[in-house]
Image (cartoon, rainbow, N blue to C red; front, side, top):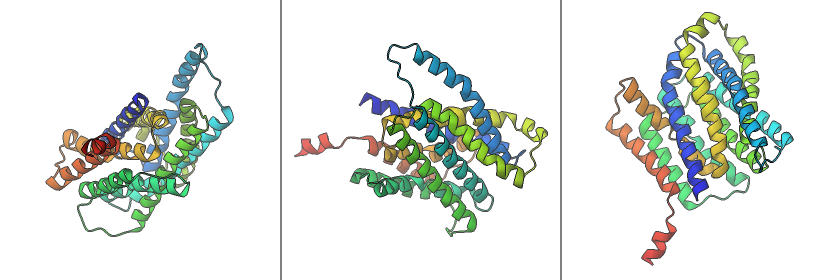
Length: 300
């Protein structure tokens, strides 16, 4: 029970960091193209995690309960997670150029329903309560993100593919953790793999400049260290203690935190409809974690 609560709190912190990083990401786009910004912050995350991972592993080796890591599973998992992260991030950046931010936010959030569907395909059954929470969250995302008529464009199709990519990323993390992969080492490897994958489109579609990187240094530092190195590592660690479906619901609060950060830091107004959307997503996440069995038995 305590481990589950620990995992939920870690994932909640992950969603908070990702949501507030939206402000920094918007600022970074003023100086760099999306590919250059993405690969720069991912490389920074990979570099930052090297000494952090080394320090943690050194501390574990000195512990009496030290267990050697499963190297093959960890390395394979890191590369697989990095490929998923790189592909999903690239698809998102391509799609967001030709669609609105609100629609992109809503479509990306659809990974909350794609993850349990992938689970069903892989033979993992979900409770009725989880499905109810997923539906509740989708309605909330729609109210929060969609402010105009909804139609599917080519950009929207890329964003939908990105949502599938993030759903696969979450599922792959769970699979390799269940096989004994080391969470911290796998997180470090995934950033190197993702950065290597994204370098190719960066030099094909853009011309990175030192001046642009320096101009967006604060945004790169925040997103590279906090929303990449810290948050994605917290995601992997947090998923050790909870199911992919519940983890997805908790992390989906990113969209809510992004809206609240825009309201607090950028002065963006939230309408009554958007506030209702935030409330529904919060309600879905809370309901997913409440054990209703004692209440049902008590009434009987």
